Image (cartoon, rainbow, N blue to C red; front, side, top):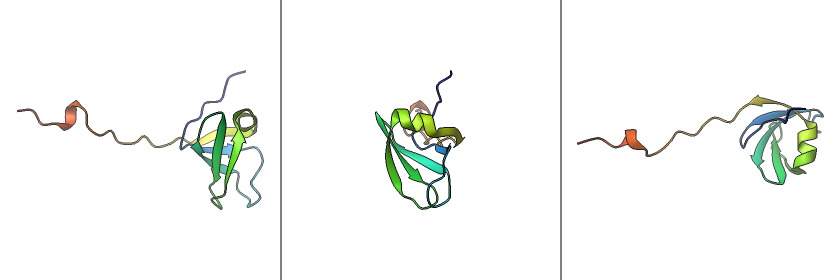
Length: 78
């Protein structure tokens, strides 16, 4: 079985809906436990990673990449 891939800031669909009625959650903290925030009512829950992976259905919207600051292209050459 293939492991599900998800990252910080992703909006994921859960198998069971939150009591407010939506089943979309945003990942706001990752580690051994994962903190997810309901997109509908903004309530956050801390869930063990194994339980989260079991109840996550799919990634709906991946996190938007942050624009890079600095780097070689940002400095004008003389």
